Length: 310
Image (tube, rainbow, N blue to C red; front, side, top):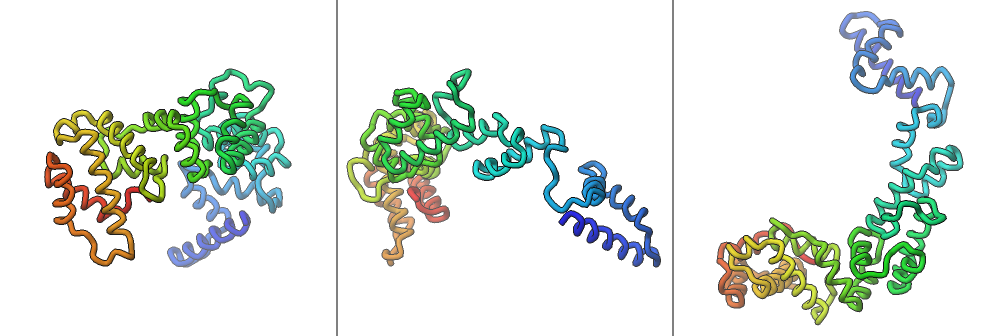
């Protein structure tokens, strides 16, 4: 492939030289022009020439590159590809920094990260344990958390478990919802990890439901989530709450209004969509202290961006 690219670039330079100067440039001059165009960046000509000289048809040997460059290239691989790469470049692909990066990019927080030395475990082995634990959680959340606790991955405290959940994206949201519904102490800690400072209310609610998925039906758990969100939003925006007259109770009412409006505008089964005037009138009946202009901005956000609990 490298030789093909080199020939295409060289032929294009030959054709350009024929048009401009009415004669074909020599291969040496063409190569020099190609090198001038690549000054300030990677010298592609030298790289392609080296590969052509060695008649290499496969991928460039990473062991021939500086270690920093080789590790940078391998850092773009996922765990499966990195394991395959270790069959060819064992020392490079088994580097602890690579596997440490994979662990922390997938599971952002684990109690074991704070320990100076992993007890009898490399980051590659730790990745396998974390992956196994995530699969266990997605089958049974309580067994999954117990798996992490028994292996010292997590400390047995609601705050540590909440941080693990907050910074992990491999957990099944349906299983996570079941777990948080039963572990309200972990849910409390998880809510406090959100920072809604200077965020518009619908956007903050979307972010909240991206981490803590709303139930499919209205019930006690949804009411609990909205109540906790309302208190957290007001705590993160004290000046905004003071200027607009927002209290946790008022935010609670607004959140329910936004959810109902989202369903109304997004559902194909609702033919007569709620108008902006109707939304303002209905919302201000329950939250009289909120200005009409602010409620109107809420409607515009849902109308333009979409559902708050997708």
